[in-house]
Length: 259
Ligand SMILES: COc1cccc(N2C=Cc3cc(S(N)(=O)=O)sc3S2(=O)=O)c1
Ligand SMILES: [Zn+2]
Image 1: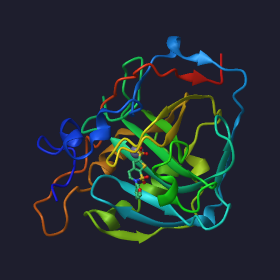
Image 2: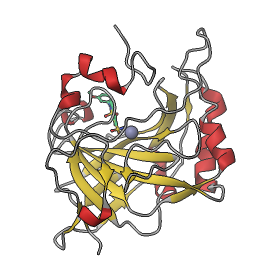
Image 3: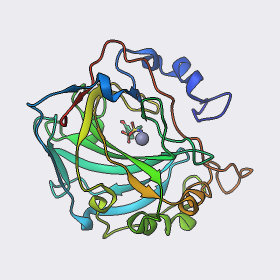
Image 4: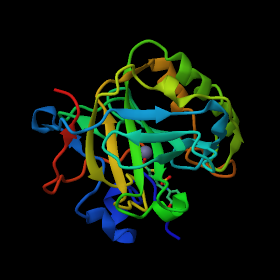
């Protein structure tokens, strides 16, 4: 089948041909305009509880790389914040640019960051991740911006593994890692109802985008770009610019838990 990607003939502008929901009413990412966000005093603080031993493997899936987590228990969960109930951590992954002046999916006041981290959680009211993945309240994704600055030692633990998964389809063991070490100190956030930012683009995501960014160095950004979209057999294509541009808000309101 005509595989989706980020190229000229299979990139975001073409996704609607295979996935009509691409033109739906709650698509992601969006441009976040801080002055237009509504402070909601009823929003709870975000409760993230991650157990490092639940990290299992790191995979190059040909679109990004992701660190997967064992989700058969409530050892690594998200609760509170804008959601009701308990959501289990399934995986985290990133989106980044070919240069340091762009690469994130969400933007703030039209400004992009070089990289954006997504921590994907699913609602335990459903029996499994795949059951949850297409329900309106099925997923909660925490988005974290990475801004250029000093090298991030916690991120480096993940980047050190990328040489083992350079090509599409490669995976390696990856455990004893606490994703909390990738988060900023304060968990102030914007939240809105959206979608997966890649096919199948399901409108099943409660987005929780953190206001504070964490650091990444230029040298670390070049390690992201050393990954390949291509398999070992194909002509090498550097994995970069794997982001979808902001989508129409279509009347949605973005709320925040900070003034
Ligand atoms: C059966 O549904 C499934 C099964 C396996 C994987 C996925 N996914 C696909 C895309 C996708 C995009 C995400 S993002 N960038 O918005 O955080 S998260 C995510 S996923 O849920 O892991 C869906
Ligand atoms: Zn993502």
